Length: 101
Length: 343
Image (cartoon, rainbow over all chains, first blue to last red; front, side, top):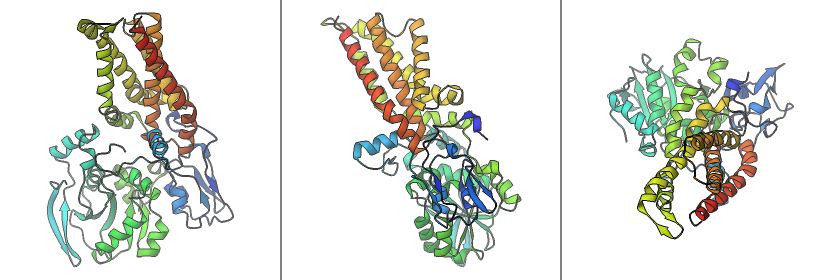
């Protein structure tokens, strides 16, 4: 369940699931790269919240808008970039000559 | 813009499209090595649009990817022996995952490409295979609503595409999960090393020059003898943060990357101390220890952006404490080291 012992900080993740809205389509389970979700009795449930990296794929692909997560780059350089410019964390990889992910 | 991989063309009722090789040439391999070292990485692109693989027809599957050539190359290599279409989105040369995070690999661009190339005339079916990481930017239900095409999320890794197709376009749990094994971490280290850019040369150079100074007297000989040691100290700490920490990542205690980098930084400092590097006096040794710990910790913290499992909330939490401490330690160390030049 826990890959290579690689788990990041616990109890910080902003992921939330509104079970009332969930239609059990299972899209969140498909797109999650860390197997955070599970489907039980035709409803999604958050099985391992601490493995969530807040990428936002589940929220984006939930047709019922039942998932909310403050998604963004879990990247120190991106956060410093945002601090320096007074913007949200951004890795600014799109400009010519910039060197990032 | 790279074009050498185009081996022919295929004519459809919707137009003529280039057909690409599924093999990597020596040119592709050499460029892959260069890009892994950050050389020309932001200009390593392919033209967005539709490409064919094998002898594709209207029933062939459509795979979507980014116009970073490394992404494109991994996909076409994985499609060896398959007749298929590749739809390349314009992500400005960024890989699928990072571009999806930014939204350039997203619903809007995908819909735009489908319409621009009249994909509905190229294939008779209405299915697209999008890499799973693309889900960060693509909303499958919106693409369906806007274009009629169903998005099927493929596996995380291109090399799992064949087993995925064989299983009737079903990915196993393992194919859906992103791991971060040693081999993957090693591949990413060169980019980390190059991240320092000119600073990684200018800072050691400044230390080298200042090392010649001692109590208002300057000697080139001292710059060479003491300066070389200073340069070695700095590079050791730099590599401790951006190479050693990533390699040892799962085995270093603590979850915070800044703490992992501190552990390796202190370890490297100890080795330097006992092998006659670091400084000559106690104040100098303490100054070096502060600077090296800060450098290693900071560089390791930056590896969060490369890793595949750190959350924004987590990185913000660790930085709130770590960044000020790194700045204070580096500042105190620097002041201490400069002061020792005069006593």
